[in-house]
Amino acid sequence: MSLSPDMDTDNSLANEPSVALTVDLVILSVRHGGLTVLLAKDEARHPGGVWGLPGGSIGESEDVDEAADRLLFDATGLQHSTWHVEQLRTYVPAVSSAPDGGSRSATIAYISFMPVGVDPLPGSMAEAFRWWAVDDLWDDGPSLALSQSQIILDGVDRCRSKLEYTTVAASFLEEPFTLGELRRVYESVWGVKLHHSNFARKLTSSPGYLIAEFDGSPGRASLYRRGDASYVMPPILRPTAEPT
Picture (cartoon, rainbow, N blue to C red):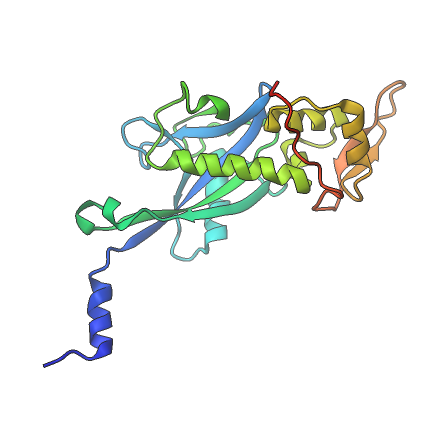
């Protein structure tokens, strides 16, 4: 007896390896004059004491954004409503990478920018954490969990690109901040030296990017808060100068 098209399709799907979904968090910050990524030791996710990105599974009653929000709090112990958080992309391993054609584990990666000087609280999800300079990861960095190098590379590239046309650079700073502090964020993320007066003129002339306030001390420069604008107008293109 021949199989109907529906029965044939059902059998074909039954033979396909299943895909489990998890969330990985690329938490970036500026430390010691450079762009860094938060790596954690989490025996439940990365056995053997290896370093890896924080993250975890998606709950049955959660959508992906809700899971990322919960996991970011679990990983840091911090309220992060003012941080920049966005979905990066989904990474699905090839069928051949699944052992014996079994279950594959796909991950949906998010990037988040943690303000300068803020660290995860004790007792958060990770057993240990460390900020790693992204430029050191490929030379003398830790042994990363499988497939996470590409996720970090993509997250760093997204971060550097977004600074050109959006206002997310201010997300790396706690308010209020100075123009010098904001300029050093751009310099640290891009790895270049910027002309301070040209930079200040571009940012202060971008509508809605910054809101100036004066701290009242004689001779002190203005402090700034982030405005309502989401985009820098006109965009600030990344210089091609030699790295600092």
